[in-house]
Image (cartoon, rainbow, N blue to C red; front, side, top):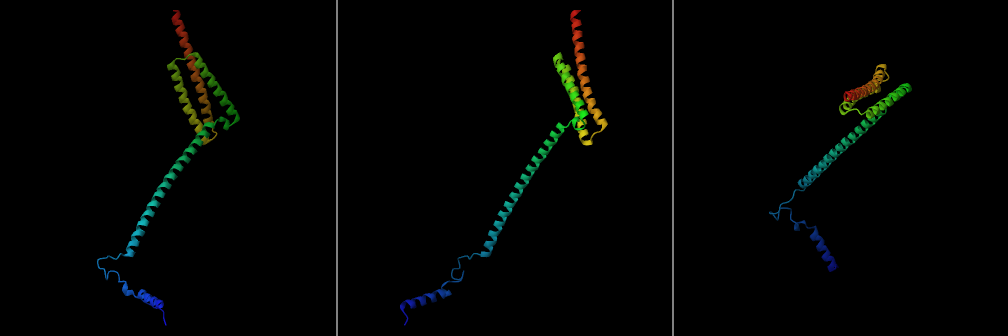
Length: 191
């Protein structure tokens, strides 16, 4: 004999096994649209792909900008180091004797400039002298660049020494002209 509970369970299981209770999609309810799962998932995948491509594109642009900034900083540092090396380069790097000569000429030029300042050179004469000295300095820098690039060559070394000699000559000429002008003005006041 079966109990009522067992009968109930049997009936319940039969109901669950019976697919006729659940109609096929669209058969009993014609107004309900059945979604196409494949199409939905393809759309979701496409959207995810677009987002991924957009993210990769943004990361690529960010990496490119970072690379450009890093390259710019590296080039700037290299140029600064090169300028510092050029600024520290002197005839002392070529030979001790030439270094001593260069030191002598530099001190002489500085002493002569002090004399010019003490002598009271007028504005136009002073500016003309400084313009000539600046022009000589540009030639000097050109010779120093050539010396670094081409090495120890007699013509370059003579050009460097000649620049110092010209500087001294320009300063002495300015001093002489100033003395002449002062002497002329004194004579003019006496007469």
